[in-house]
Length: 254
Image (cartoon, rainbow, N blue to C red; front, side, top):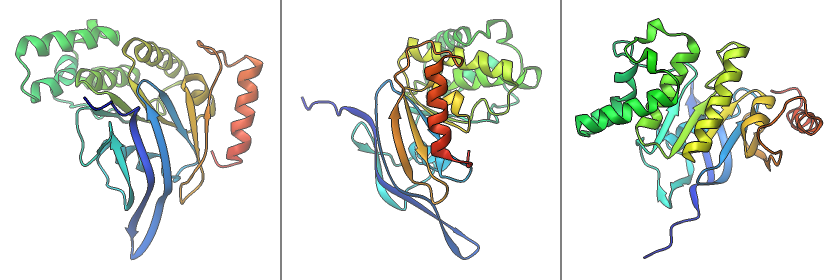
């Protein structure tokens, strides 16, 4: 049997250009990155540096202009349930209740009804929404909607969770709670998470590795491990030292 590739994701010399009003815009330039299974990687950088473009290419929603993206050594050609995206605007189906939103993927893939029900219940419980299983998105707070979005990706058997500033629209208290919950889920499930954020503190709090991107055209300018023990404390002097380090790297751009 062939040995399994070491990395779940390999991004190799990826460039992405867009045509915009007759001009070529380079959104991402010569990005290379390898991610191991179970890592929590944060992408930080100024607006327009290609963070979301890179995420969408890993998701299979965009194709690179140059270079290649592989998952488990095979080219990423299109979206698939093994890569789940969580957006800032939740992306829930308003006409489905919490349970039906969470169970949508397994049901759409033809899983048996009993299995869909069991999977749905497990992930609704995991994100703490058991009491709201029958509620509809318009009846939920922003934080609850984001929990549903996370549960939906997990129920779909995603191996890689791609998160595009998922907590950016939430108030500070809700954001802190969801950061902790996501870390607990990640530690329990050993998922691979790629998390885009503008907030340096959020990246240091959550990530094993922080990948820093430059203003457009987006290039990867640093890829650094965060070696602080978990759970992390934003008031800790070492935490603040790292915050200053990344802030100086980003200059006035973030």
